[in-house]
Image (cartoon, rainbow, N blue to C red):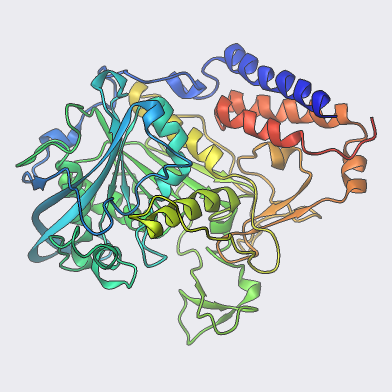
Length: 508
């Protein structure tokens, strides 16, 4: 049995690379076919390096930062799941200081200024010849009352293999100073110089982080690397704030060449003059944690509802405020059917990284068990896989000037809820192989943040796919479609094929 499965894996894995070669660029121009863009530091349609000529002043930088009680930066890469050495990457931390202007939550100036000192967590190629010219600048997510590098967790494989530079930024007061899990509490010695004047200044703190990559009074956070494209990225709460940033602040500061808006829907102004790729899951279509039917109104607050079935935890949900805009010249929206706001694969990395942070300065990490929420397994669609393809597509768009093809949106009923089949599978949208050839139901809406997975019975699987060959032929067609469309890259497509080998309900 083991030999038979290995032989099938070799056949299916070879198919992925054959398909990628046959279809070339697919529906995404340039290197979005999965070919490497490493070392492509050439001019392009969107290679304006706006941060190099921004009107913002040069921040004062210090670093690389070392020492402290922990002896390492908070939120660094997991040494076990994402080691940097095989890719000749290095990790460094820098502080940067400047003066920020206060703005309201829509990005409009309020007229006051304040000084600050924040930090840049840098993971980058050591040598310029291994740099693809693109920097991903992430606004750290602080929903969990700690700084989380969600984009590194989701995109680490793509960033490493393609030679991006990654810069995580401490933008909000919660993650830096006010939470019990703030970085100044975690290591009060290392982070003693940091100061935050309040979240009214968060937009300018983000802008000045990008400015520090080009103009700085002090050491260069990127060393000898010369960025040609700088992408602003954020997930969930950070993505919501980046929508306001793109619509209002971007035109003032001109430091970003593109935006990766991850897991938060909202309108993008037609005036935004750089590429924006908005990546959404079905969870955001019906609210970030739970559908309306599972929540009860709380205190007349239209933005927050209490989740039923979880008494005493004080957990709230945030319904959608506004839907995403239609695709336009500088906007593409990917809505991933079956995906949840966060999922099991993302939790594997995040728990490992949190274990290493909590254990520092000791090398052996504490072990955390991934919880079972809502009494069922969390979503297992592996949202990180199309996430990597989305980033690749955005970079190809910026590199060539040709946007990726429009992706179908998730189907909605008249009341705005997601259209589902009899099993509960969302209809429409971008459909990765487990949604095109399901052996269970992944949903994003029925458990706080993490969705759920319900496997089909063996009888149901055999009814859908009478033989193993039927199942594998349909799966191969689904993988081929995803590669051709640019919704998956070959390394991630192989993972879906490998997982399919575990489906063993037929008697051969």
